[in-house]
Image 1 (cartoon, rainbow, N blue to C red):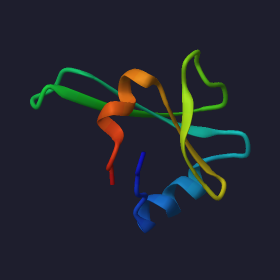
Image 2 (image 1 turned 90 degrees about the horizontal axis):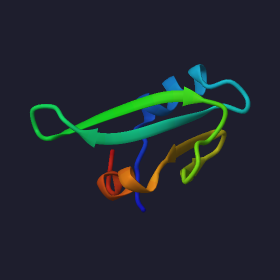
Image 3 (image 1 turned 90 degrees about the vertical axis):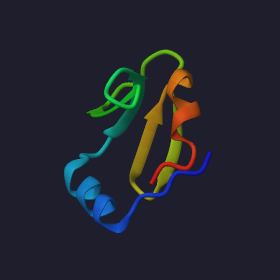
Length: 74
């Protein structure tokens, strides 16, 4: 899976995330285009989730139902 974090987003995440925290990204049905994206900061992964991006101290986690929509995300 290929995900690109732009420099400004990386700076924001590095400031916001505390040690042991990660960014959870999810995609659900809804919204004008049919999909809604959400992001939360957490410390514990839910069942079935995995790390989809590790870049330095930044981890992005997602579940299998969302992964198909995240490939190529910038």
